[in-house]
Image 1 (cartoon, rainbow, N blue to C red):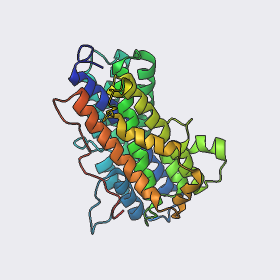
Image 2: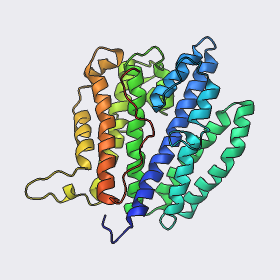
Image 3: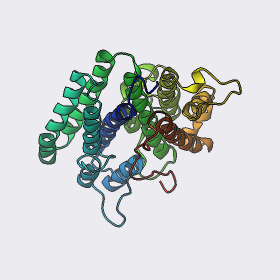
Image 4: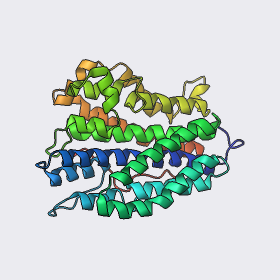
Length: 330
């Protein structure tokens, strides 16, 4: 991409548009999976499950205070001031779509705009009858939005920035989910809940059956080339977008200088491509290298986001999670 084809501010808006819609979708999936888990098992520890949600999404739970689903929903779903909540992410997605209105298709804009205006009514319903209709609306509209992007946008730089943002956010969120499970924390989600939160339960069952084998789940979410929400698939898509956006690595210099944007995710993609699936016995705590791998995945996404910002929209830095997430203490 060059400055002759797209303004930097539009490129940045499209990149964060893809990230914010994906963030809202993933957060809704995670919350919905946890809610179903609590409803199906009335004896489960609500406080532990809610603290697990906070750990996954990088929001510190209040110490010394009981954590329940109402407080979780207030912070992770209904808080329009936080970029890490569903409301906040969709508000920012709408603002970015408005900023790039000349590139975003009318149907994409109408999808986001109508969704935003329906959220207020859905919040009232959620507080009265439960959040499932609210979370269902978010998931459906996120799927509709990306479907409209695929069907109404030309395969140009604008579409690539949306896809790049979505792919990086997807890698980050899947790494968060797996990290909490792999560390075997007291409040970690079980494997069926993790599959459901990743939108992978039905796809996994078609291939592996209903066994729910931990190693098989970890392998599927990390290494499956055919599942669009797997880490390897998302990394490959992000790297392809950077090549098509005209990164220097597409036409390497004689001295072989690597592209700072492609380098972090390219390394991680290669690392996963040649990872022996047997090493994913880590999922049951037998492989000490997996937590480090998941941490490296998040760092690679962060490094690529910074490099993309410096190359394609250098007038400002990239937007980040308001609270940094760490695997320590989970």
